[in-house]
Image (spheres, rainbow, N blue to C red):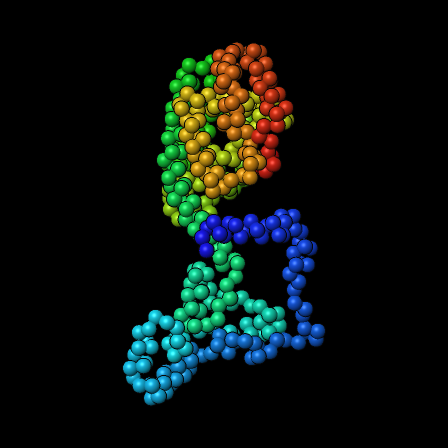
Length: 381
């Protein structure tokens, strides 16, 4: 069946069942089998195929060899030779290799509950277990979780390739934006310079994590990162509680140093947010909004916004958001507000009260439009 046929069949199934089934609907559609009235244990010896699984492999091989010898006496040696060379299945080709017998404790659990999980027979994958059953010519029950596991492994492998492809692009984005930030910092007035230095530190940490390097001027922050615990640090000129355990690589990100570095850098750049409204201190909010404007201006002047859009579109192909939009104010959303109208340039060039007025107006626009309203908190508030 081709991919198109699968899609058509799936669409037809959705049309029949609808997409609003509740758990009660599913239970009604697929009722469970009634349990034994007297709660007596299952007689395993009467269960179909249990004798095959419970057979001693050595005895099974001896019995099969005896059957082949009998067949050879009846049909001749050439019959057995052709049978062994044949690509077709034949009962006399069975060769029991694996021992699937349960311990007494496992048998008791299976008889009492109808299911048992044997940790002794674990394998690296579902495919390995299926292969053992296949080579031993035993009955196979294919479960949906095993199929989904195979799909997940394929997805995971593709994601690794994509992330290794994106890592150099991320390095280019952060390094070029950091260079532009340092260039603007040398010409900025003192108040804007503080925000630019905060953005400089933010980008420096991100780039250091990506390259696996240690920044020389951010010792306390780097120590907190390495401890991988919740800690209070200074971020964008104000105190913030950050759960640094989030930066510990997991899953496929533990497979190489490149993936570990990519994971830490993406966690930093993705979860260390600019808290531009709703805080306890309005001046802190406005300062972080100024930092966000500085970052967007640096992205614009380093021609990095298009690279961010390119990376985002690639990631969205695999990890889409269902058209709900980002769970934070993205660089592109802020850029649309401040770049075409030259608000960013005005904010960075104005002095004192004029700059604060522009920041307040921008903050009000963002709040009124509901841009980047967060549904998920990445760190303690």
